[in-house]
Image 1 (cartoon, rainbow, N blue to C red):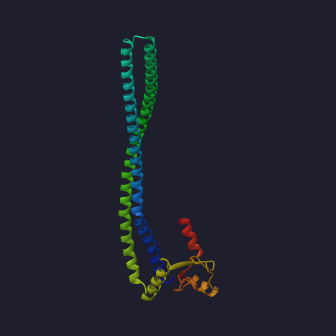
Image 2 (image 1 turned 180 degrees about the vertical axis):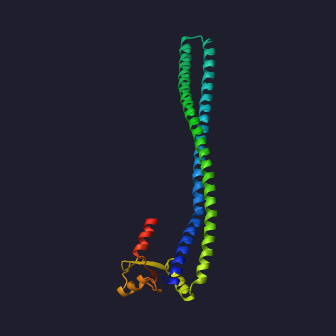
Image 3 (image 1 turned 90 degrees about the vertical axis):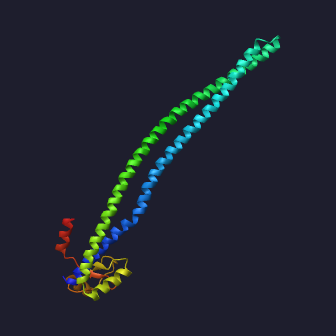
Length: 245
């Protein structure tokens, strides 16, 4: 294979690997925000359940105050009942007592409902606290993994950049200029495999004479359509690559 052709293939591989690593690095803030969002969701859920419990407890205390008011009236009515002098007054006081007793019974039923509700909410708070603790541990583990990945990606980029520089130093300046020009115009992809008479990236059929020349891998040739530098992988080489994969 032509030495410069081999070098631009290597150069393209380095550029693609660096691009992938840089893309993952660029995604790091979004991935970190996603971790924060999951943890914040667990925090907000716990806060919401606690607020529900607090509201239920407040409502229960209000009902208990009403019960105390009606029980106070009952006590007063019973005292007054002993002092009535007529049958009419006695019957009227009995009605007041009966009404107060009904109110107390209704309110006590509400208190029972609030107690049951409170038990459920207490269980929900406990579960939410456990979920938050789990979310916190997962957040810390994922963040450590993300930090380690970022560090490794930076090392990979540094290593690939050094290897790329070594290849560039050996590459013919004219070929390098062609590579850089096409790469800048074609989203960083300046090299394409030619297979079955077609450029595998732009999918345009090559002229038979061009494809036959590309098959020899002896010179720098570009696709007439996308201008990418073309190379050919012999069948035996392609088969070996697939077996290794």
